[in-house]
Length: 224
Image (tube, rainbow, N blue to C red; front, side, top):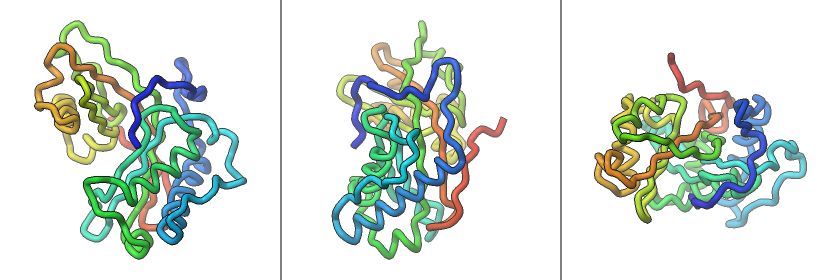
């Protein structure tokens, strides 16, 4: 479900100001993601979009839904989303939630019992990606910030994306982040240094459950 197309609309991400979600909007998205997974696992059907959706969540934005297992964890259990604003945010969240639970090729589908008892959800709302301009590829590390930026690496038909929280969780520096994103794209780890490799960055607002079905809070990534 990760689709790379030209962004069509995401008006709340202004060039002069940072997009914001209220705490209640972020919590709402996570609750809807969980309800969507529960409904789908029971019925094999995507539920209808809720009738009480705040109007702001009907704007098109990129989003990823991450499932973290708390059994031995936290440990990644699924992560799927839309890098670009192709769908209204609420719909993209619901679609991503289903695919994260049942369609991530790295994992077998979650069961209803596992979802309810062992999976904590995280929703990341993304800015549209911006191409990083650099006269020399060695400049790329100085143009990204750990804890703020996510990365997309593209070369030919290969594409890889890592969310801003990933290098924080793995304690990577900027060069390691670039190399790991290249590996995610199926490239060599030094492909970011090769002419013709496209590097883009984006930011995200992240809300997460403290435990499966538990309280929801905004996740702070930057430490400095």
